[in-house]
Image 1 (cartoon, rainbow, N blue to C red):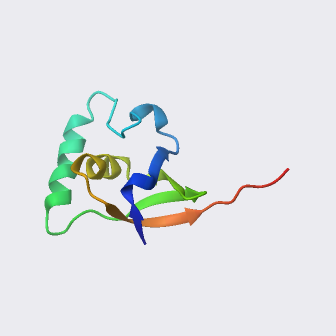
Image 2: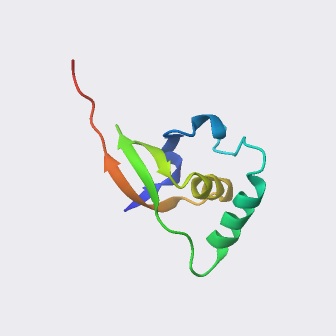
Length: 90
């Protein structure tokens, strides 16, 4: 499904690797980020990202670099595999 990139607000397992704006914090990620940038602009594009959805917000399970590049480029939507979660009342 298509997901609005602005609704992707966090990460599962890699929160310390990205800023709040989803820019990479890890040194050495520049080359990978650049390769993803080239792939995004290619005719083939990039594969869907894997997201978890909770209360209308999305969290990246796989595809952190793709989301980072897409946010930086101002892309509005991304193709994604989405797993919906629900809160459990205690």
